[in-house]
Image (cartoon, rainbow, N blue to C red; front, top):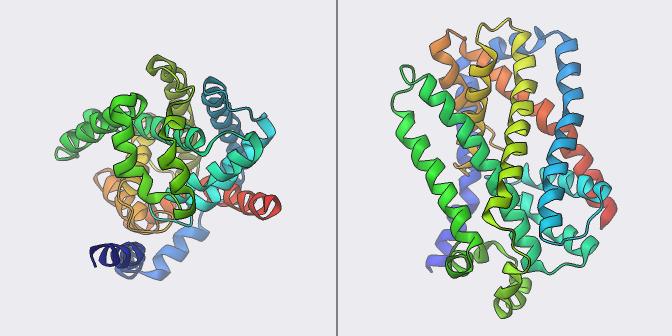
Length: 314
């Protein structure tokens, strides 16, 4: 009975994000949002879209480093395709959990075990999250007068995620962590094989100090992501310092990532961004459009490419 109730709650969660989105649109006004959207010069969209290529290159380079450390043999071209496939599925699920569907494409291409590919995908995502939270933490400290209540929350999230990564990478605590938090998300037909060989999770597990390189490159990826949205913001001549804007963007993305109540972060992301830009005098409709357009330039093209590669690989 409890499992059925949890499944029902899980199916209903994405609706909350849609409700938030509709509420924000209604509260701001459709006409204001449409006018703000069409006021952005097209050249800002084009420039922001072009930077996607740089992000794909840097992220894949970092992910390939983790794969090499774990002796998962995948060429750069295949990693780019699998990364884009992950973005596609991540945007179809709450909290971007669908991103981990990419492990089945990794297994197909590399012939590595499901346990090793699962561990690889989890470590890759967790390092990205830690880097994003760290960037948000820097911003929260600098802007503590604007958001005094956010600092303890962000500090807690940072150390919690660092602890999760450390525990997972240590076999003694990681196996328990896997059974409690990761196993429920694995399709039933694959669970038996995983249960019989949890050892595969720790096959060629990288050392903790090996994570310094991925964390550094993840930080660069967050800078690129924030820059894409900043370019869109310049279409409105927003008077927010570049570095400050990068940290605000990171906070908004981390926010919807840890609140899996909407598909692709719809509604949650926009609500957080409107709140964060309010102290800088940015009108609600402008903040809403910046957030939504930023999402389009960051994720739309990669997701479309990911959908193409997904169907092609099947």
